[in-house]
Image (tube, rainbow, N blue to C red; front, side):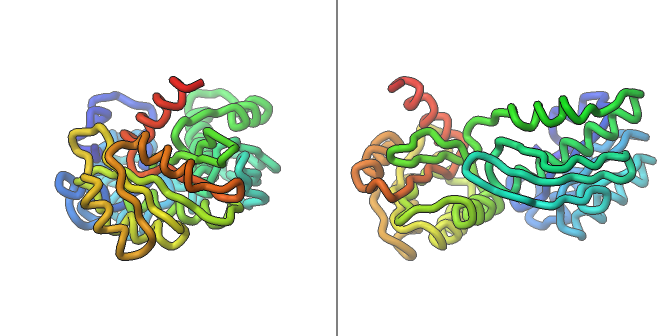
Length: 289
């Protein structure tokens, strides 16, 4: 968690990567992006390259200041990469990626991870690989890169687990993750109505998460996961009823069954709120196969 207090700080790494910074674990990391960035910057090692993803400018300034103290070079997706999005579909993304400093110009890349944020993640991974390749004296091969992006699997991230009815699961567990989820649901998928099964941990900002989801959701089915940190169905019901129709259930499986009974062939079901929730879904899905 963070960087200064995280186990990864113990590793004598060849490269340090800070993917993103947003409001999460605020009780431990601080309640401002500057404080959180300072904690994240604790991962930076002396004279070790730092690669950063898309992060707010004020958070980036904190990271760069720490990197300067550690005499570590900094590269970023926003400054060192040029990306052109060509297509986003329920099956994956197609895009071009250029990293001029490392003589990389890959066109029409396909990554089978779904969502605009996965284009950012793939670009970040390419930049990391390019930095390590130059440092260690090997070449980033285009053919192998294309194969890797095409075959990568990350369960629980915009993953389709059923086509009839259409069910996707996503481990968005904070407001920033939900913002990406809402964008992807509105831009990539087609459906008549969206039913959303939600189970969130009590130490997350579930009120804001549900508010953001309400922009695209027609009906919420709320439940409580098996986690000791789970929010109650009652709390989630009270949060959701301010915005849309809501049904409360006792368990995640009961919520899924309710959503299936309500969904027509033209509707879609999204299950989200926590990786603990997604774990339950995947276990249940595997057991029924």
